[in-house]
Image 1 (spheres, rainbow, N blue to C red):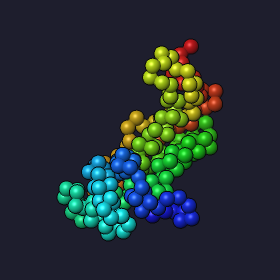
Image 2: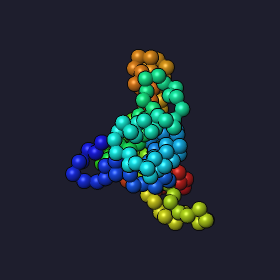
Image 3: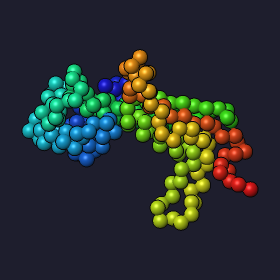
Image 4: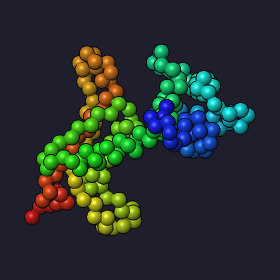
Length: 196
């Protein structure tokens, strides 16, 4: 599952060592709706015998998960996806990519990013909000003091999804979500919305 096999923990390391709460977070980030139930089962079962094979983990997930609504989908698919994403730090890499891409845009340049599941979409949304100058001050501060600069203007308040005709022509597009932003001119950055 690791893109770089020379460093970092393996999926087996995560399953063997993480707390129930950490496993839940990872599984939720991978869009697993039964994250809590699966994390509890992993922690419970590894006390008796380590979960070191993919077949054992898949069987464990299948034993605690209700039947899949989509026939043919393995019940452990989202669990393995979540572990792969964590091992490779994919969401962190995606956030860094969005920031780097926005940084090289010319003023007025636009970028569009397509994601294929909720965890990726959340990472892109948060990265764009940060680039748009989202305040990071504590909730009890009356006036923003962080002075976060506005580098982009978000063009899509909500993700753009494929329509019925596109999904009929290209079934893989059903899970695609597109978000877009425009690089602000240097003179306008930080002054968006000011009326003089």
